[in-house]
Amino acid sequence: DADVTQTPRNRITKTGKRIMLECSQTKGHDRMYWYRQDPGLGLRLIYYSFDVKDINKGEISDGYSVSRQAQAKFSLSLESAIPNQTALYFCATSDGPPGELFFGEGSRLTVL
Amino acid sequence: AQRVTQPEKLLSVFKGAPVELKCNYSYSGSPELFWYVQYSRQRLQLLLRHISRESIKGFTADLNKGETSFHLKKPFAQEEDSAMYYCALSGRLTGGGNKLTFGTGTQLKVEL
Image (cartoon, rainbow over all chains, first blue to last red; front, side):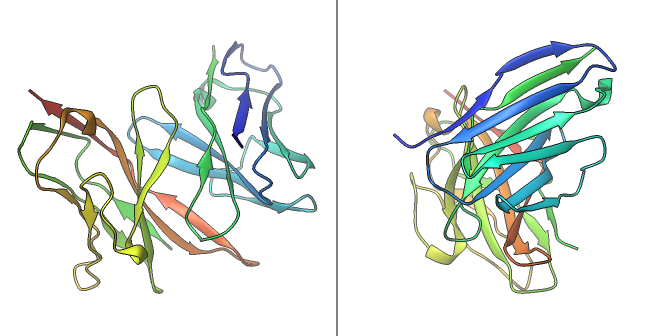
């Protein structure tokens, strides 16, 4: 089955470390997104990309960067992790009707 | 700016009782609204969209533009309905495409 895969699924790191979360998809979708989920805050958009050459900031991009290596791969980096970046991160893809996103299983990041 | 409000963090009902998960939105254009669901240990997935006016797993949601609401309803709750439910609004992004804004989510617990 076509899928959205995130790695790592869980990561514990220390303040100041550089972290990369990776997302790959076999759905053939052009659009990819990174969301962050925090209790009581729902999901908030960090970055999105409509194709390999198109990358855009979402509502909470500070402290994050992304790379779209190929249509199928979209990575999220924390250059210098801080504790308030502790959260569950979701990658999602879409191609077609607006609003229909296909999510990965999530990457739980803990910054100590 | 677009905003989605889900006033209840937790909704607990008994099996067989009616369910109503509230969602209100703020958007200057013509809204496209969705309900997403996240069952325990599963990824977030689309439940239904207002434009298709369908019933999925017994759930329905009607867009009320006058009250700017999109409440999710089910006449008789089942144990398997226990999950986290997110209301989402699709609005236009600068440069094209759509952005999905999520509410903070409501945890539905169906008790026996």
